Image 1 (cartoon, rainbow, N blue to C red):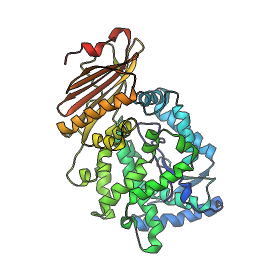
Image 2: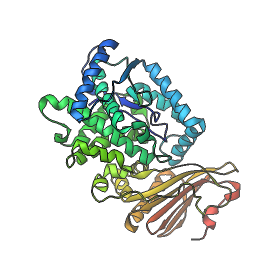
Image 3: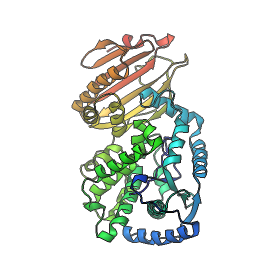
Length: 432
């Protein structure tokens, strides 16, 4: 397997939404000298035909091609991220991740993400300009793998208009990540099929596919300075579309021919839950319950305002919990997710905080999450003092924070706010 692409509408962790990227998995490549550009472009035309035949989709037009240095790729990424998100959005994204506790407070978010791309991005396809770019520093074998993956994206674009497909969701990282998993899962599958073709096999025949790819990625992480140093939450989100996307597609394709992919692009998975559990997409459909992300929680005192809003979803909730509690419990507690809204809150008195409102499949799953959050708070804030504990509400305080989690049937609300003069002890004063 080769490299991968990445895109997002909502988070600068993902490369700009108008580009689709391939990542280097250097540990699995043979060595070889990079090809000159003309030779590489001729080879790309041949590969495009082979990918078209594998996928059963007609080539509508040639793909423009280019080669860029690592510095040129970084600069392109930086300009697009700053244009698409803006400094305020990037800072709010960073601040929320810090508040969740999944990145350090002093983490240089944008700079570190760009450094990671420097190391990992091997090429990208830009659906706006219909151009494929390959990194000039790759070996010949890496360039071949990157071409297969990116030309798969070019073929997808010609039939399914990737820019529109990946831009359709807004302020919902979970839905965006699910769509990227569809796009990346297909590209990884075609890359695997191309390599397996001489052996008369395809990716559907590969046992333990996700586990095998995860092992390769772990090996790559060990050999990658920046990837290894990246906080686990960001690293796991970074590889989710490839690792879980191809597994989703493998399950789907065992019951559906390639031709049925048109149905997925017309009606894609709406959550990472559906990617992690394909039966919730292709079997008994379980779409998320919308939670109004612009509605202020009525129980908050005056003054607080929503600065930024998003959706975490099952996968990010799992990673959030796993940061502080054991993995099996985090996995179990994040199952049964049915919808959420996470809101970065700001107070004019200088305070910050966040509210997390979630809906679960039933009261039992909500109870599991409620209890797991209680354990998480103890690990996340070991100096916190429990100020109320019941079957439906737990509260804590520290020198700087007020924390509360409420259980109400199949819903759980979690608040973690700075203690400012106007709301000191406010959580203790709220009615049950």
